[in-house]
Length: 443
Picture 1 (tube, rainbow, N blue to C red):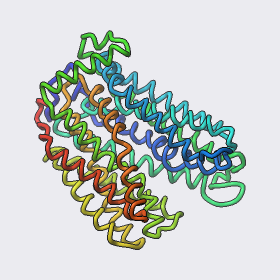
Picture 2 (tube, rainbow, N blue to C red):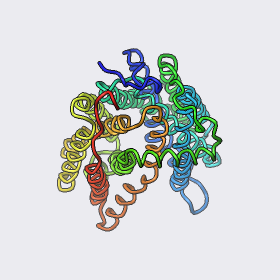
Picture 3 (tube, rainbow, N blue to C red):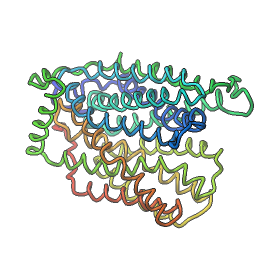
Picture 4 (spheres, helix red, strand yellow):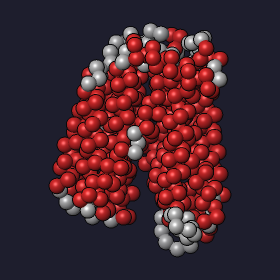
């Protein structure tokens, strides 16, 4: 099995099975924030319980949207230069540890957010801080992909990481639901946790924090730090000067290989469409296809399982035919399935075609990461994945906005699917113009 040839970058030096599994366990653990805190449990607690009697004309949901919007702006501004500095200083693992620790601390502090609107602001601040830290932590984490893989297996390793994230979210959601949430009355779950003052949900946040902390440790112990590859001004630059270095590097990259810049734009489009599929899937399931509100979580578990399997299988395909073919095939399949969903009705049809749609989400997400990893000049992985995060944030309004527009224009949530298909289609067209990365050891 060939290794990446640039040893200064640390690429391909840590490809043992133990190190790959340790790297994937961070994805497994980070599902504690993405699935439990941000998507299904704590954010819902803030809007439906803590802020349900918030005085004034602005709803708790609106404040939540603004809070996450501000967090997204912070990420967009800081991610590229942060990644650049991780590369220059050779401190990817150190940075991953610090950012993960702050995320875990913010999650644990959510225990103090009581079911009282006076605590809404504390909850929003903690959720915003955790969102920023978790997203920034993805930059050094994704940058380590080439340290735990070779050009021959980078697709499989990336797919393994995505699958671990999906499965971790499934296991943790089921544990939280059965242990702390299921049932009615003053106590919930098989642990019989009291619901007074939101105690059961606050304990879920604490449990999720411990979960993330435990599964984040292996990567910090097993994967070596990246050696310093660039001894230029980037290592000594202050925060403001880092933006000048960033502009210099982008200018050089544009001259040397413009497809990286084009790919960042194309991937931002189709990644926003992928995010929209999960964001609005539950809404469509209930309002359009008649799935019961209680069954949505079951569908969510099934969707994550299918996406994880898709990511694992597609990882092997990625290594054989390259990431572009996987992404293009996945997007075409998703668009075709989305068109079918526009005309079918009923829970059975949604279960069938909704899961088919999810089958291709994981492969597209996983190969999107390997595409950039193969394009990135050795030693600049942090900077490029910082830009990856920034460009994704820059267009993250497209899918929600178009979904809302078409749902409003046609007077039905079903029409919102058209908005998602437009974003996926735009990303597909943009990607077709980007030349596929080489898959040899010279990447």
